[in-house]
Length: 84
Image 1: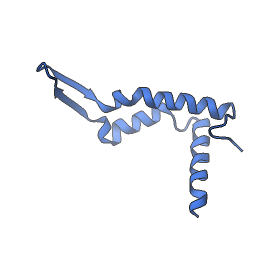
Image 2: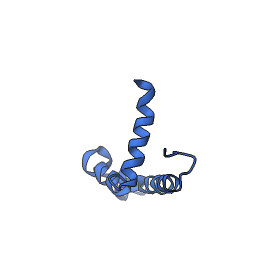
Image 3: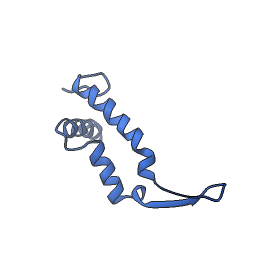
Image 4: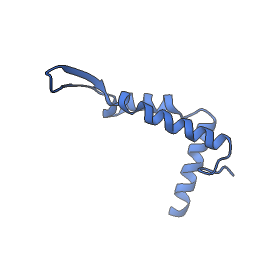
């Protein structure tokens, strides 16, 4: 059973991405609404200024790059995630 788990999850992720069921927008929205990454945070920097931020704003570029690369790879039948 374990041998089939990872290939199944990869194929599921590929198919849901191809059908636009999951992607950058959905992941960010989920993280903002359902995890600590979406919580409003504030901190004081070394100059005494209050800085307000969300972790999702800090990780957005990485997630966007992942989906950009992933979508190109699966749509062109690249070598990272071959479609059968």
